[in-house]
Image (cartoon, rainbow, N blue to C red; front, side):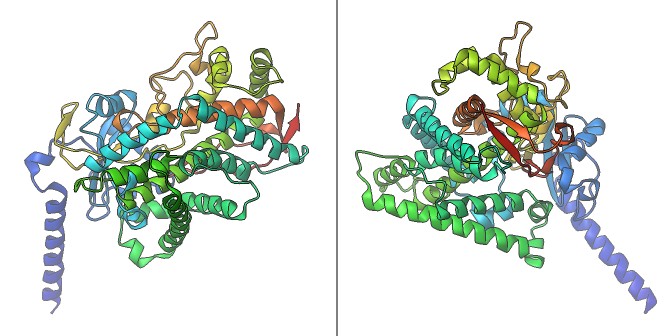
Length: 495
């Protein structure tokens, strides 16, 4: 019996090894040419060598051994990581179409599916992206109308801070409301009062879900989908939150359908509904209700959370380094003065302010791993073979902190964007919005918001810490997917 037990164990081990080799190598001649990387273990891949809380740091450490293009197995899935400006540029720009696919994890599939602007790929993504870029431009992205909306919202935000009368306050909810209202103006055709309870609840749902999605548990869900069945608590919370957000966006879409005037679109939803009517007889159209619903959700959530978090991080940097906000205020007083609102035309005359805004985006490293890509066909990169359908991680952290492109990558340094004459200069490694075909659709809008909100706030207030600035930490509250500053309070002192 003991012999049979030992034999059974050996047979089981052989079967496991067989399937492991089958799973990881399939066609050895095909996969042996893939980029190098650490040897994976059965089922878990290289996960034991990684840490979901600081995954990007572990990947950077592996780069020292395997180079800037390497294969790491997250469970049984090979993921090709691209590290450093040059490798990311070669893939996403020089082979833009090949690396423009989108990997959608089973976690995201359960939450929103592969519909909408962010998660889609192939023809669906091409149609939705083309439409979204055109529509946002039509509604003034980069033009006067959007600028006026932001200026108006900046005035509302200023009033909210003024109501604090210099008492300590948490800027989180104010910033989320202001940024979200800009998106609401574009997508829904209206803004919401800061005291609107439904609006406040919606922003809390977005905040809660970003915390859940940025958690190590969510990353483990994506790597080991079986965990969603074994430990569904986090998943159920995310689904409940997403469903509540969907109810809000659904109600807005239904209101638009009831009041739609086909030759007079008011906003993004109207334009999409009109496009749906125009393409109703086209069997290959992607302009359907599900893509509308998820695209609206994408624009609303991503547009709210990314820019508001960047602003929250920026204000934290200002109170830690008071001399930086003082230098910006000197430039504001010289170029704009106190009697009119800042405008985008002022930016070219304010190189220091422009440099600080860019350095905030570089330094905070908002999405260090980037959103995962996927190859659309077989290709080679730096002599390595990468099959079609391979998951690609063009790591933004490695570009924004590339030692060959930034003088002091780990320090906050506005001089990264200033030349020897104090004039603004762009650095090609500035990629907080990614690059290539999957460049963030809202890049222009976000840049406009950051400049106008920051300059309006610093025109009206000096921000002071409630503690010794030396004790303020800029380390993020979460680091796996989406980096957020640790909670803080400050005092908005009228100038």
